[in-house]
Image 1: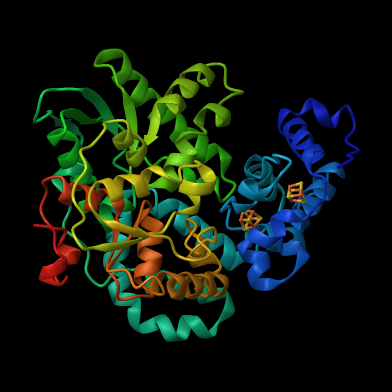
Image 2: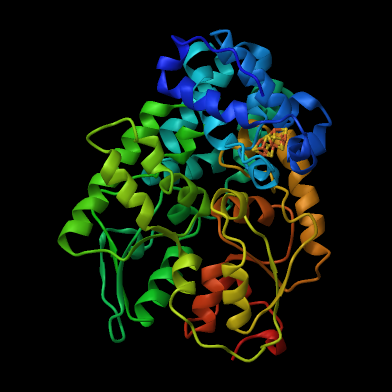
Length: 441
Ligand code: SF4
Ligand code: SF4
């Protein structure tokens, strides 16, 4: 694509990067076919190619964002299906990141939109605040129908929908500490404890730590870790996202330099995509660029790391698992085979749902900010998952677990919970109703 930025505009490294990305796009439109918002809404401006034109026009003309551009960029899930499909290697992720930051810096959103975004940015990245908010949501539940009738308040109704009826007790595994290897030691890793995940489903990190330590891997949860920053990053709040990235880089570099680390384990693929991008996010910061690149190089999804441990094969045990590949896993990190191979090796029968490339509509805070599109995508995803007739659904991202669980009665777990069970852990509580004939013994 031809671009017309002035030399002066290109002195801004963010503009220069976006210009290089834009020039790679050849307008072919292959990406439209796999874009969930184009597939759902059928509007070119809600396709990757349409958004690329909008961003080009806005940046080239040095214009502040307006309501139209903001609407179409906000509707993007950042699922990155377009990057998987694009034959020209257009780096849509960094282009949309720039566009979101530009919107945040130049566009004044309507009051309610600003309020909701401020609440989300002030609550979700902090486990204590998030837990309190979930408790308060119980009191707000009777207001749900009223919120739903007022368009500007629909996100509050969506938040109440998403809030679980019961909140698990805080887990000891969510605290900073060290978990010694239970077998001959073969590795040492740090685990990102996370922000929303340990509140919504502490069993995921518990299963990860139990499994790794049984396999001879020491796991540390270093003091001082914070949210990875992806939630605010996707809202265009760059300074807040970079502050989170710097805090985590400091913590993990300290751990690398004191005890040594083979990997930084991430159990939510949305976080993994962001942490693997720390090196890029902090590339312009001379104090952090090199350290952030080291951290990104060590970041591993739990399934990536487990795949390197050569786990033993189990006989088939009669449980069929539909594997839902989170967008951040398959498109963001390009991890497609490892989780399924691990499940198969552990004795599960694995089925792929149709349209596996399409997002479930969770996408960070998307299911709160864009509840209608999100609901359509959820219904489509659930139809495809249920059509597999699987006993269980497995995935690697808490956002997808929460979203899909709202639409189906099939139990949905994190992949590592099934692997922990298969390799000596207890049966996950969510599977307690499974037919005994289908249970691993
Ligand atoms: S990131 Fe996803 S929703 Fe956004 S343009 Fe690409 S495919 Fe469409
Ligand atoms: S597939 Fe790639 S090159 Fe083609 S229109 Fe989409 S982003 Fe541009």
